[in-house]
Length: 232
Image 1: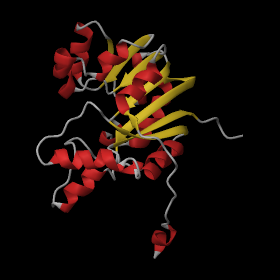
Image 2: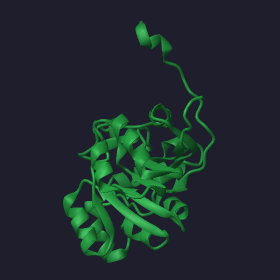
Image 3: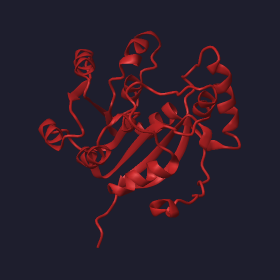
């Protein structure tokens, strides 16, 4: 049977569901922040209309804010708008070193990890962007969110075109700890900013109601991490 014999259930921790953006804004208040994956092309236009772009909101509370992304157009647009922004591939240690970005008190990595081919190299590289006593907050969509289950029951799959992986509580914590990140707190999240359309609206309402008794059916996951001390 090989590794199948090792598969077992893992008890989920007791957690509190949070609003993603409000959680990140609270963590960023008064701190020097670097935001990886800030150039959300789908939200930049929205930001001009109603202020929902997370990076712009972080700028209102952080003591200092640096944006990092591989989206050249997004980086150029942010610079033109007065933000400090760097075109950096966080999966390339040499690229990170060339950028010479000062390590942050708080590193925010929002909805990026599920789109990265080599997650281990990516997580290793993020240590250079975080101060030794700093904090990293990683957010990702939840593999077991209720809307995913609902879509599967209709013969469909709910996914962003750029996604290459999905994370649950166990796999998310596991990959972080394998790469010397110690998870100090964990939260499922919902987003009060997101509104579904059509048939998805009912599934979203059910998902938000279900979090009262099954929080790990929520739409996403947040891991708050610190750099693990070297063994010995």
